[in-house]
Length: 434
Image 1 (cartoon, rainbow, N blue to C red):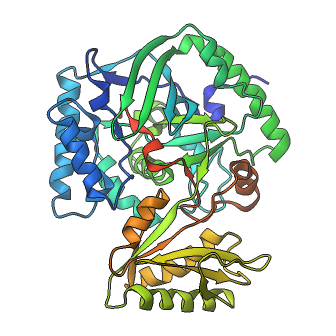
Image 2 (tube, helix red, strand yellow):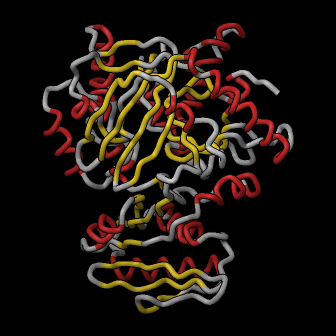
Image 3 (cartoon, rainbow, N blue to C red):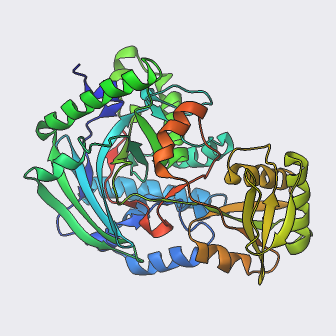
C-alpha cells in the first residue's frame, strides 16, 4: 500500500542553515541537555565560540535552567534568533532533508534530519501513537523548557528518533544518490566529525516507497491502530515540550490553520536502530545531598528505601553479584566503591527502574537531588566530591527497544543513551516556527 508522509508521522521541512563561509566548527554546539553538572564544559564552549556566529547563541544550556539570570538568558536567545534571521546569518533551503554522517568515538552512524508531525505523537502513559515515547515523561520537566520554546521564532533539533528497519531500506540508500555536500566539519570538544548532504524533496520518492513497505510490515506485526513506527532515542522531554507548545497554540487556530501551522511539526534526526554505529550506553546517576544527610548516611537512607520497596536490599563489597533475578548495582562514595544488592526486585523489571524508584523518594523528601550522567569517568569524578553518591548502571540491548515499548509501554526514565555525551547531536540545522 502507498502512503503519504503524514501517514508515517513525518513532514518535509524547509531547513535553515548558516550562510556560506560560516565556520561550522564554531557554529555547531552539543545538545543543551548535556554536561548539566559540568559548568567547565560550557565555559570552554563559550571561549571557543567567542564572537563567531554560533548555535550557542540560539539555545540555553540546561545547566542554567532555574538560575537567577534565566530570564535574561532566554531574552538574549530570542534576540539572537531575530538577529540571525534578519541579517542573513541564517538562510532557508528549499523543502528537503539533510542526510547526516556522524563519526565519533571510532564509530560512524547515518541519520536524516526531517520533521515529525506532533499530531502523531503522544507522550501520555498508555499511548498508541505512531511516534512512541520510550521513557516515562516527567511532566514537571516540561514547563521550564516550554519557557524557552514558547514564542521562539526558531527551533533547532537535538531530538533523535529511531526506526526499526533491519533490511536498511529507508535511510541507507540515500547515500547512493548524487547529493550536494553542504557542511563537512570537525566538532568542538571531542565531538568527532559530521558531514551533511542536502536531499531535495524530489529525491525522496524512493524513501517514501521504502517507508510504505515498512509500514505494511508494522501493521502486520502490531495491528492497525497499535503500530509503533518511530521510537524516541534521545530528546524525549524536548519533543514533549514541542508537543505541549503545539497544544497551546492550536487552541486558537481554525481547522485549516492546524493542518499547516509550522508549530505542528518538530525538526529531528531519524536513525535506524540497526545502524552498526548506534550503541546504547547506560545513563548513570549521581545523587547530591540537599540536607545534612550526606555520603555514607545518605547511602544508608537509600538502602533502607530500596529494602522497603523490594523486600530486601543490602550493601556488599565491590564486585558482589546478585542471585538470579536480582540486581547488583555498583555505588561510589568518595574513594569507596561497593555494591547495592537487591535480591528480589519488586518495584521494577530493570535495575535502573528499581534504583530510580528509591532515589525518587529521597528527592521528593528534599533529602537529595539527582543528575543523569553519561560516562563512567564523569560519575567517578562527581562521586569523589564530599557527600555525593555515584551509581553505575548496565546498558540495555538496543534490539529490545521496539518489542519492549510495544509490549510494556515506556521504560523507566533515563534507561539508555545513544552513545556518550560527546556523541550527542550537535545543533546545526534550524527551522522557522512562524
